[in-house]
Length: 270
Image 1 (spheres, rainbow, N blue to C red):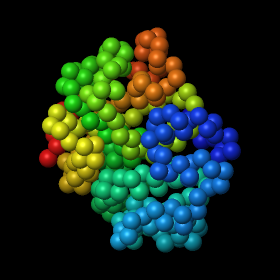
Image 2: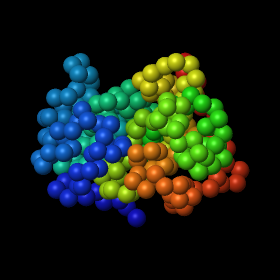
Image 3: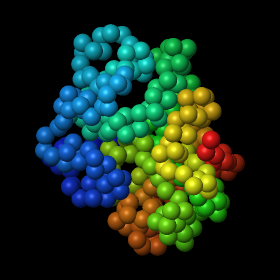
């Protein structure tokens, strides 16, 4: 069933105090106030010199005949529906992670030119999954990957619960649909993850840039099977019920490993 976000005036304000929305405080004035930001206000947040701009998605704009991705690649114009949560969160992602967004757009535009707008490659599917529900995971403890590989969710989120607060593993949310779904309290969130091996000291920005470079050069997101499911609602602070062990034994977001399913090794920082 297609998710429908709550109306702006119906959003429970407590969702902005919990992950993942509490990590986007620089855009609090866009999320929490009664009035929607205008396209002009969105564009005012761009640093000087960038190519991209948000534009209201009107009939006149769409009459240029360009695919959404082609319009961005050619003209830097990001068609944006006004008074729409999904597109507002997309704008926030663009402003925080422009290199990652550009890398995805570059790859999507190439395949649109090659295949047309009616067909989609495996790579396009992978890129869309990541664009909508993607997370970049920074893993510093290899033993956690063993639990994740086996879908040992009880181990990953309960027995190793401290790992999510002591720096052993951390997450940066990229998918704008994840932020939209987080508007509904109690909703179980599952991300599509790319994992960076962070055993060498580095910052989260380095991990995001590493992903952007690997996508732009065609090394990553050539197939949806590259993406690991990560039940984000198991992370401490992400769901009100996950402080109980029973949650980690019964939550519907915890799916067993499919027979024969194998995940790629984490990407090493270059």
